[in-house]
Image (spheres, rainbow, N blue to C red):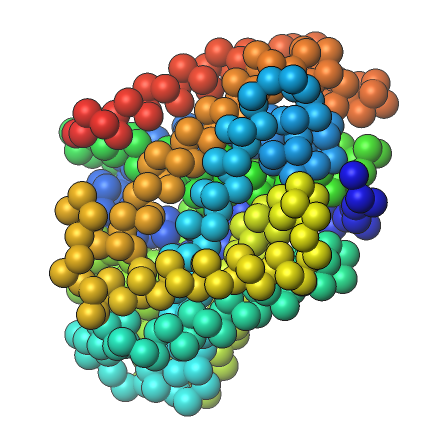
Length: 454
């Protein structure tokens, strides 16, 4: 195998994993999924899924990645020689590329709205006008594809620069800045007239609304937010040195991700109710709600409103990039290490395929809106396919591999860094029980609900 780059320190590794996890999945997807699937009841299931299923799965990917120091395909080949596991590893090369195709569309929307914020176009407009402008923007046949292309080009340039020179540099300031700005938006959102109805929506669960479909979507959102089951955690973990404490990095990433998602929910939903927007408005929710917040701010302080709007959409764009490059890197690592393709060539080969599918996803809001796959638009089909099926199957693959194929002693060795880190046997025992028994059973049950419906 070629000499591989590693992250420079444990802090950088944690920031990279957090950058992969904390992004549009929290700011963009979490609020509208909450709105579409029952509010607080969805959040309760989401929290339980993150702690009981997502954390063990994340740690299983981390163990496999660092143990092998290889891409998803090569990891299973090296840890299970002579078996067919590595062919299943190909699934986790394909899945993140499908996600990135529609994710790049939303990243393009973020760039579009950053440019709008620079011109102060949100000022003095009511919620209905801002919603209409968003609908017009995404249904345009050309403009969204141009912004999607710009977003993908930015991803390609970062990934082509390599692990240390490219990926590391995008993960050191992003997370602190995101927290500061999302907290500021939340504070202001809570002061809007009617905002408390949004708070009530988030804190008072109605468990009568829970269906098998609700559970499935909550688990899918947890996986999407943490980038599980698609090899991003495994790939990034393969760049973590043997001296780093992977247990703390996994716990820290999960806690930060949960916290950020909840803050984003309290930043968005109160404003949704204050603006009179339907909570289940779908993928465009933050692009309708946030401009309304900035418009409201602008009535009293137009300069402050413009500055905050610019900073927020800059942050969203950067957050989108940190997650997108982690997905991009999965495919690049596979082509470089398994097929002997040069890094830059691999980047541009993948760019072509991702861009083409992304363009179709973009057009599904306009010219191709009538094209349906199993009753879904191309965009929603790719989202549902990956979040509710491929990610879950990939996650099941990882926990079965770490819990049943790998030796228990090897898993423990990775947790303890060869005995360097001491912890209570009950800690490892609890984790290993969740990994080997609870997570696989839970995954199978959730996976089945996607076929039987609600």
